Image (cartoon, rainbow, N blue to C red; front, side):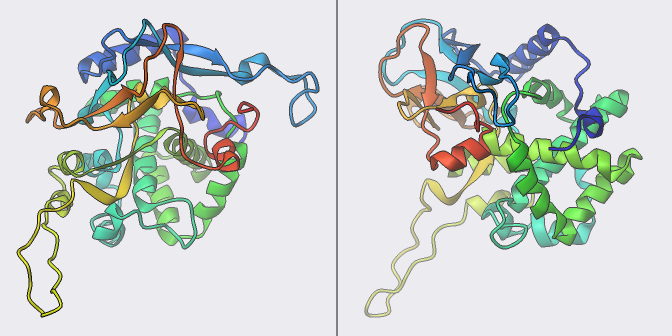
Amino acid sequence: MPTYENRHLLRVLKSPNEIAKDFIAYCKLKQVTSRGLCRVGYVQRKPPSAAGDRYGLPSDPSRYRLRGLIANKDIEKDENIVIVPERSTLSPATALRCKPFMSLLPPEMQREYFLTDKFIKNSRIIERSLVRHNQLLLAWYMTYIIVMSALEPATLATVPGSEVMQYINFMPRSEGQFDTLADHLSGWLDTPEMSRQGQVALASRFGVSQAEIRPVILYCLCMIYSRMVPVDHRGLLQFAFRETELENKFTSTALPTPDANGILPPATAPSPVVDEPIGFLCPMIDMCNHSTHENVAVMVPNDENYKPSALTGPVICLRSLRPIRKDEELTMTYGAAERELKLIWGMVEILE
């Protein structure tokens, strides 16, 4: 991971209480609700090792604590515990809708990589890279907001949607171990020309060096990979990409296939889910930790109580899979091999 000196743009000059109050204000503004069913708290997933950490240094107990979601009361099965409207989330669509940010990127780059079908089909910045074009664009957008908050707070107040900084500030700056993941990501960012162009554009906009911008981009990518929720609900994606050039990419009907006699059947409606989920950062839900004994899952409800409105669109929910006891941690299974979990979710020394 870059050294502390290179990470000065990531410093948050507020107390933990102020950061928490700002996050609560953001959730209220965007109508994120937990209905009093859960709270954010610290959980101890593994005791500090007597042998020290992987560098042989004395173990810091705080490195083994994670923020998580804790049940405030007994919760029945199939309860929507946390309800998150799309407008509270961070996604590639958020970046596309921010015109001041998008204006930094050359039009030809936008057309080739971001305003195209492959953008919503998770195209990679280079072959076999972990980084997708839509994730990199979101990381650039988050970097834009973070650096503007640090250097030009008055200007940030004029940027539509800039209140999302209250959510970004609540993301951990020291929790988890992302050194190895950041090293991998850094290597992939060095090769593509478009990656370098984006870094240069951000550095030039704020009059800082690329060495100062790079750690912020890496931090944002680590947050995206460790916290994103894959969304495949067609209606929610269409709503998220409203007012962008990709809005209609989620509405087309499926092309009919000729039968054995060469006759085309009537066109059918598209599936309610898409083939390639797109990563969203969801306040509150992104603090639900991994466990092989999950008790909640993320879903987009279709029941009568949560019909999409013109204002909020479909919502993303954290729903209970079984009865949950008061003070029990809410967890879900992330669905990756243990080695990948430890790398991507910053749990090298935390997961048992």
